[in-house]
Structures are given as C-alpha cells and as structure tokens.
Image (cartoon, rainbow, N blue to C red; front, side, top):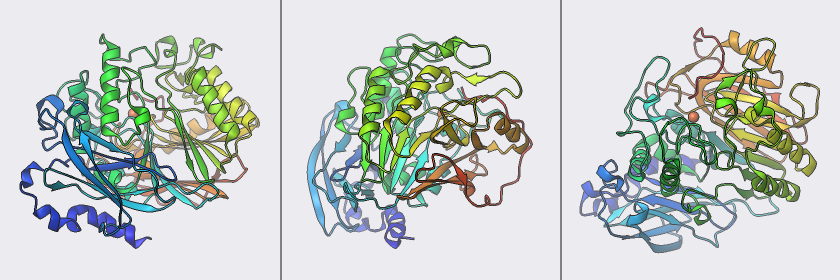
Length: 532
Ligand SMILES: [Fe+2]
C-alpha cells in the first residue's frame, strides 16, 4: 500500500492545512462545504472543481452566496504540503453558475500525482489529490473504481468510502449520481428511508442545485471526489426517471425541455467536467474519449440524449416486438459513427465503453419466452447488433463494457448472438451495483441460479449494494466485485464476493479464485427488477 496516499486520506480531515485554516476570520462562513473534485484526466491536464456554498441548503439554491461573482484562488502542487506549486491562478466563481469553479490546468507531467486546493474569502478548501493520465507509449498498471446509483434517502454512501479506501487512480461514475424524486418519492420494498431529500421533486434549476448540494454534504462522497479524478457521465435520474431523447420519463409533468436544461446545468455545475461539456440549452456534449497511455482508452457513451423512446410504453415485458425494429436507435447514428471511428483508430490494449444501461441480453422470464427490461439495450436490439458489429469489425483490442443503472452486480460475456451460447465472443460486460439505491439488498442464490441458467452468458449476479474495484495491466483485467451487507446503517464493511479476470485477447470472463465468505443470506426470489 502506498503510504503517501494513506496519509492523504488522513490529511483530508484538515490536519495539514490547520494552521492556515485557523487564520481565517470566520469559521462559520466556510464556503467549501461541498468539497473539491477533479476529473477528465489527460496526459498533460486535469479539471479541478469546487463550488462556493457556505450554506449548501439555503433557499434558492445559491448556497448562501451573494448575487455577485467572487474571485477564487487555486493551486496545484507536486506535494501535499504545497511546497512545490506548479500551477496557480485566480478564477471568478460566477453567480450565474452557482459559484461553481472549473479550472483546466495544462502542461502537466504525465502519469503523476498532484494535489490541489482553493482559497476564497480567507477560507482554504480541503486538499484534493489527483493524477494525470500516463504518457502515450507507456502502459503502467491502472487501479480504477466503478460506481453508480446513489439514492440519498435509501442508504448511507459507505460504498464510496470503501472504494476510496482501495486507493484507486481513477473513478468511473456511470450515472444516477443524484435522484430527482420528492422526499419519500421512491422507497425500498420495505419502505425504509434513512434521511430525507430536499423539498419537492426536482423541476427547477434551484431544486436541482439544492439536490446536488445535499448529496455533496455526504462526507463519504466528498472523500471519494477528493481522492482521485473522476470520469463521470449521467444516466436518467440526473434529470428524471427513464427519460429518452426528447421524450420525458415517468414524472407525468409538462415542460420536459425545461427540466432537461435545469438538470444538465446543475450536473455541469457540480461535476469536474471540461468546458467542452458546457450545456447549451437543453443539450450537453457528454460522449467523449480519454486515453490512459497505451493501456486503455475510455469511450464514454451517452445512452440517454439521442435515443428513441422506450418501446411498448417501457417496463419489463415479454410481448414487445417493437423493440426489435431495425430503425430504432439508442446512441444514434452520429455517436455510433464516432464510436466506430474511435475503435478503428484505437491502439490501446483495452477499450472500455463507459456507459449506463445493461448491454447483454437479459431474460428475466424463467422458462420459455423472453421478458426483458425495455429501458436497456434489450429495448433497442438492432442498435445493439450494430454496435457489437462495429466492435468486431473495428478490430479494437479487448472491448470491455462498463455499466451501472440496474442496482445489481453482473458479469457477462458479450456475444454476437445471445441466443447461441457458442457464438463469437465480442468482449465482456461488467455491471456495478448501486451505492444505495433499493436499500440493503439481499443475496438470493436459488433465484440467481435459475437466472444464470436462463442467461448462460451471464456468469455472476448479486443483488446487494457495492462497487467494482478493477485493475488493468497489459496482460490482464481483474474485477473485484465488492458488496456491503447493509447501507441503511452506517459504516458497513465491504467484502469481495466475486472476482473475474479477462486475459489479453481472451474476450471472455474467467472466475478468479473462490469468492470470499458471504454475509448471511436472506431468502428472496430473483425476478424482474423493480428499478423505477
Ligand atoms: Fe439507478
């Protein structure tokens, strides 16, 4: 274990910066309550983020800030004590952007650790740790984490803390970073809620800002942001449940374009995204490509903004033939061509498709017939065939699809024809469960055995909460599926309940060693997801 990083975790408590912080004139007015973040690493640059909000839940979504721009100083250093500052400057936190700050220092050294902090109004922010991508032509090992689906009401964000304790170099957030529901608007099957959302279902910019600010009041979320750079992309709940392109989701409310504009703007304001993702009205450029030396290329996909509406009124159905229509799109032709071109030109050892929704065929019906979740790629089968075909035709090395959304861990092979278990392997799909969404979860081995028999390309399923800790080297991908026994109480431990490897060139999963001891298993049947 890297002692520097371990010490850093302790340092974020403020110890290293205490002398300067003590000199600040007003302790109660600390504007850095939402923490710091970094993201979108390249070999020579990074995005540094903060937002000034001394009272994060103050009415109006302005975080208790005055209606004027405020200068914020920033520093980037090679060491945690800031004795070797390599970049610094002053930037305006603009009132019109909720006093959020996005700084994009360039000309940095590849593949190295940096530390950053901000200062405003006599207050010093916590220190964040970040990292640039390695140089082209190099392929050092990468430790990464994958997370999705953190509903604030349904549990504590312990999984974020446990992932931070794994000391990853890079975090992939696959969407549902916030949930838009009104307080109590989406409950676990047992009705349990551990803390309450801000007032109202999110519709206005103020409401989305308040919701994002509330989520960042969670110290475990702030810790994961401060520990490593993120590559983040939204799914549906950053705006509303199961929206699709220009079509609203299940809110039943008018003026969807307004919610999209507000939700996108608040997402940008609260995430370490590049200026290239600055929203324009109700659209936002989120599909993008990032290189991690020659080891990996991350092809980040946007599976919401360009899709046709879910077929057959959405849901889990066994009678929907509309889902098979050849003209239906999910990523859309422009993004699909961009992806295909990027795959063809990729020289990376591993090609990771960072996206949201379940890509492999997934039959929830136990027995003859297919019952599928229409919000996933199963609702857009022709588009799935096209994308998997593009993957094969491109010759891109070692495709790996990373997925969130579904609130269960899954590991699956991706096949050219999912109805023929012997058909060509395209690559693998790793699905990370939720951080909290759907509450404590359960382990149901009997139902799972049937589910896996019904879907022989799926090697693993688990309905508890957690995250994936991955490790990439030129010869192997390793994925450790961590689960937590509960999230409705604080401080759950995490356990590796399954590990898989993919060897360079294998295009298929191999189970690695015996899983660790399991938590006590609750009796519960597998079945169609109740994800709203
Ligand atoms: Fe979710």
